[in-house]
Image (tube, rainbow, N blue to C red; front, side, top):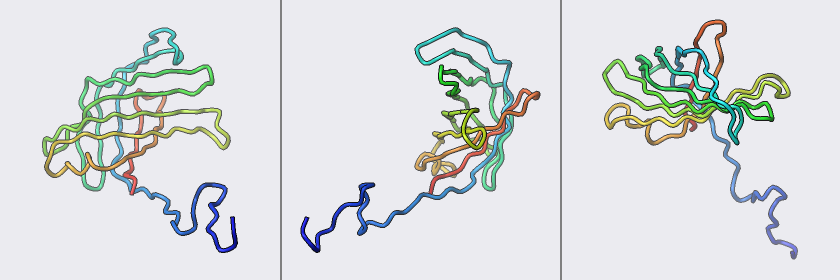
Length: 159
């Protein structure tokens, strides 16, 4: 390339387009009650397990309510030791709106620096005061509360 040309950086970024990193803001935390994990046998994705969701509560600065019973957390423990969770359940807000939660989690207990447990969360809400949940991307964290049969989930909107 000749002098004066704009050469792409090794990362593929171009200096005329500033790097704008996303930020997050806290939306809610949920205490979710789960039944004992049941083994379902092997699969190409790893050892399959399921944990029925029994209920719980959730609360954030602008939202609160209960976790409805009836959902489930499907789990796959891979040969690499990574646990992949795929949870689908409903939450009901204090004002009666039902929000569907699809939470996909990766847990790596062998991660350098400690346990890695992060998720991407899809929320589906009715139109109205909670309709904004349909139009944003969400991420989360998950912490088991053993020996209690509950998990703590914190959800953040990606800005």
